[in-house]
Length: 342
Length: 157
Image 1: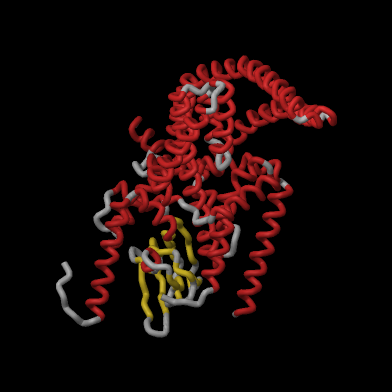
Image 2 (image 1 turned 90 degrees about the vertical axis):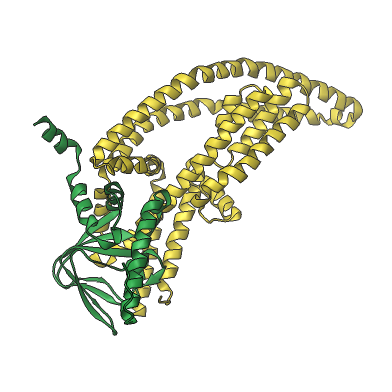
């Protein structure tokens, strides 16, 4: 009996390693499937609500697709003009900021060289400025590649939408197909894993959506009140999972300092971020607490950085739920081997 | 005619039948049709052949099984029980993280509806009324069983 259990455990580990290796090798094409699975998880409760009135699944999918198109169109009509004007301002502003920055660097360089002559002797600042310029130019040279990536993202969106449609329409048939792939005696175990993963993913997605939307919208409002330029763009940056608030704070500080030429704006920005953080932790997080994945901050940081290192940006974003899934599977295996009866 | 075509196109008859079936189950007494539809949406269906093992003693209890059709035998050292369609077993899995204390075997070809605990808990999170009604029914049944086993003839209803 014990030997058979060990064999099953070993087989499970081997299957797991094979799946992980396959996902790693096929990482370039996995992204649209992962995103589609995430989005269909998010959408499914709405379809279930429509179904609970007795309608067929496709009715729910069609209603939701229509609602999504209308909401997206409304959002584009409302946000695109202000986003375009912000980008226009940003385009003009960037040259002003560069000029200001260049003058500032030159003035500082002259002052430092007068105060510490050795800096001029070895041209230390000249070397540093050249290095920074090279770094920025290297980044600028990457821009066409990024633009190409954006085009491939747009083509991926079509694929993702098709996949979402199939996943939503498939519903329980997809589940039956997966379960029937395994021997009948494993039905309960397979269902356990699928349902636990499903639950973890749904909790994660809803929790993230609540948090990022709150932080993004609040920082947009607060920066607009303070009068910092490009508040909408910074608000959008804040919505990037995990690093967004930090990047947003840095961006808001740089733009605020250049725009107002004073450091009091930094205090205002920091205070507004502290207020958002307090509101987030006291009012929003309790809402999302039920969606908690029970992962410690160190584990989360490790997962994000490891995901980023191996799979790039998408790896960083999906690292936390993947880690939570691994934890769930591991806990289930541990539970299965415990000998307590109720 | 048009109404019939629309009904055929839009209305989910399988769901309707499932709701009608779940309505007869004691565990779901007092639930509205919409709530029953929500329950039936988290149900997984499986057919077991005669003699096929459903679970064995010591297996982790995560599922409540409802017998849609057929016959199931529950066997342990202490008891031996046969249950038929319209009944359910493994109900403690809904309230406790425990293991089954008996073997369950299909006596003839049986269609079972599974309700997985995590799925049920996720649903109850957003539909407290369903959770309350199911737990109330479950508590009532357990209390009734205890009363009967203690030979204490308390009038339960």
